[in-house]
Image (cartoon, rainbow, N blue to C red; front, side, top):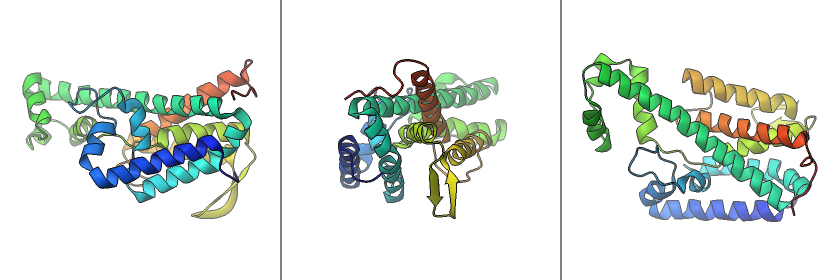
Length: 247
């Protein structure tokens, strides 16, 4: 940790500028830069990156930016700016891919269930494309299936959390015995214990739908960022990329 490194500082500034712009222009910013489901008319390919700079509130950006500074600073010092940026955006892209893939599953599960009940796919798409849904769907398809279907199509993903989870994994693998102090649990916990537990809790929430840390969280984006981070760290440790700086 310590004094801000150059890349961390620039990422903090960009995120804060996006947050201020979101406060000024609200819905337009969310429409343009959040990560929408690919079949949603608001989707744009640039959102795979731009969603990393969008946040849903002050607490959201404050937590992410603190984690970026606390865990990203020692990694940038060790790797250099280029390697850090490559890792950061790769983890964020991995999070976007996993999140979109899970949403694709939920979306098709809902479509298939409604079609099997006698509806047409075009009719379903016409309804949800207008920003609506039929309450009668809950009478013919399990509630969880419809909820996941509607959320996949209508709810955009925002935040740097996927990239941050990749950073957490990299920190835990690089400094496994570092002791972390948590506000809600004021005893030291080693990174090699805390970070896997945190990821496991996100996976549990994503699979069960039980929100341990609250509602409206893209749990599979967190898990996706962590998986991408682990793969990169595992690969680097097995070849010439290990301990090599990209300045």
